[in-house]
Amino acid sequence: MVASDRWWKDTELGKELNFARDQPIKWYMASLVCLTDSFYSEQRIQLAKSITFIYLIDDLFDVFGTLDELTLFTEAVYRWDLAAAEGLPDCMKICLRSLFEVTDEISYQIYQKHSWNPIHFLHKAWAKLCKAFLVEAEWLSCGHSPSAEEYLKNGIVSTGIPLTLLHAFLLLGQQITDDTVQIVDDDLDIVSSTATVLRLWDDFGTAEDETQEGRDGSYLEYYMKENPSISYEETQQHTMKKISNAWKTLNRESLLSNQFPSKFNQACLNVARAVPLAYNYDRNKSIVSMENLVKKLLFSGMEM
Image 1: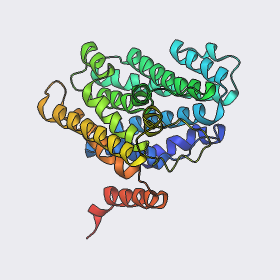
Image 2: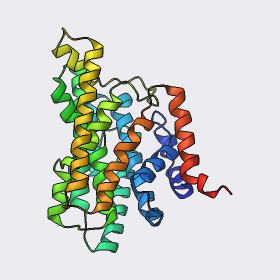
Image 3: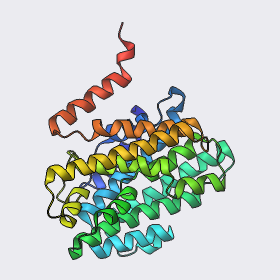
Image 4: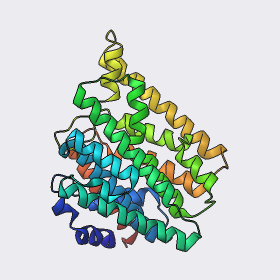
């Protein structure tokens, strides 16, 4: 955690992107929840870096960039070329440059340890995430109300969970081949069900740390627009049923499938289990829960 916090301060991204969240402890905790074993310390530091950029870019799309700037930013990520970012505000260029540097660093580390270079897949995954953010920005800009399922399909990607779990899979370094990484990247059930749990739980209005003015809509909102005769309580029940179904898929895949290493399956379960804590309904309770989680994970075992 100290190393992760030091890295964040050394980047000075908190100063350059002063509109974005500055929560390095939370970002590291997310990596700790995902990869819990003590010997994954180095992997957690690298995973926390990728999680950091998910939050930074989310805030950039949500509250800072114009639609034209966000489109150009996404194109630069697709091309993985800083020259394509010419004309963007300096802070967006700095964010891109740092993202490219960190992704190259992570790729090199994986290559050194496992003799396999994941850079192509990481480029593709970051482009996919930015495209999902851009779709939400376009909806907001033109006042488009997507169907609930259209929103959810895009929202699964925009959670950042598929990108996070792809990084986790690569950093674990087990069974890495072009074929397995492609499967993880292509809407794998255990990944999409984990992301569905987060997306729908978040959409109960529990993203209490997001104090920015941006607004992406929610599954509940769009479902009620499609079904004007049903009540909010019925919409909640419907959404909870979808969360329950996602959990059934997640449990089935983690228990019955031997397609991927058990450590990766466990990482998916860990993330989904942490969702109700990370996205608590009450803002104050959410803050207290995070403080307690840090203490329990890091210090309770030291009590005599």
